[in-house]
Amino acid sequence: MTTDPIILIPPTHEQSVYGFHVEERLLTRFLEFLEQKGLSPWRPPVPLDKNDANEQPLIQVDVESKATQAMMEDLKTEFLSQE
Image 1 (cartoon, rainbow, N blue to C red):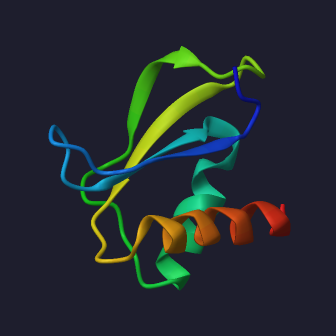
Image 2: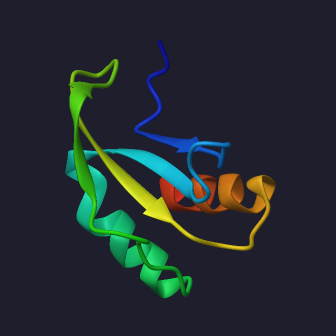
């Protein structure tokens, strides 16, 4: 199991937007970061019924963007490098 505090979930046939599973402790700062980048959640963040490998509660943040998966991964990396 991964220990990344944020995991990118690419769009699929079931979901047309990017999703991020974000450790709850990072949620506010991550939402502020996305806003600075001109992105906003597609819907309000949703708590998930599971924890990550660090035993941190996870929140799903869905973002609609025309960005590529690589660009979204770069955003995640940039955010984590600031933490």
